[in-house]
Length: 459
Image: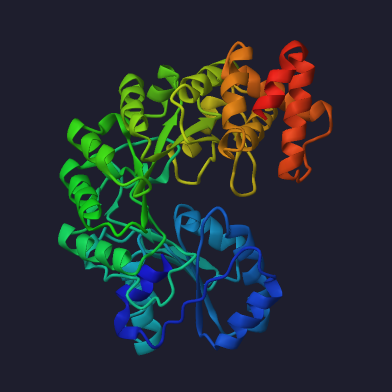
């Protein structure tokens, strides 16, 4: 996001400084750096993973920079800008929604003294004791944003995020992309030129942030054909796709790609038809299963499948069924996530109807619903950790393939593993790889002692 803002305001290039930090850096170090920049205006890009950090920073920054204006933007502040400004009296204002044009207008206001804040759309700001909201800005042409990575010098050890479309054709109730119904695409000639830049600079990985990359067949095919034909054997491209929308032409092209050229993230979220309907999601599970298998058959594409716990009508048993359905698709990674109740989403506005209760602190994770009590959330947390250790790590592929047959279902295996870890005080410890093998071996000895020796050979 910050690269986009700077690129769109290239006429103020010398006045705009970019600063990137990590949430693991000491706050004092960041305070010192921002203070040393001499900035008259400091803007923060806010997300669920950094908002608490940003709030703390601002409260200290305003003490050492009393004459500086502080602005925030991003999904974490856009949907309740007035509330954020009320809670944070240190803030000057909030950029709501898409920020490129708004940021440029603010630069004109602060640097050239052009217009006044009341004439800038897409902002909420403080004036005396009042908070004024000027309304959301109209959506922009995605092709009007210049390429943002032209001046980046080093690409090794970096994941590059890239956007070839904005918005989403679907209306999933837990997602902020469902609010903006206007789906826009960057011109394909621009996209190809920029893809070539990544390939030429041997960028290790490019993650497309498009919400449903393959929602427009021609657009997806043009990009996939281009990276296939111009591949230099180094860059990996990551795409979030709806598997049931993949057609035969797309699948055939994917099956011909170099191993490691692309990886796919497929959000299944639930196998419960009632849940899928309630969250306004469009998905044909039978088609998903068939398409995932067709791609897996060739073994050339890493597939990452997602599930979300805490959705409406999904209780513990129903989630177990969803887990087994997805596990049977043999994904390279199975991510078991928990519902995050995001400000501005349909789920947030209708929480009462679902008995949905969540944590006040980011990332606003579900605590319980009418279908899933907190005790079951805890049980699923244990399953999540066991999946990370014994499946997603890839360290026990052979053993788990056999061990799963010893239990009524894959879900039962991971539940039992979680209970074993809990009973033996193994959670909360950073186990070495060797210790992980030892833990699994001891679990097998307690569960199936008569066949343990054959598993020792597998391990």
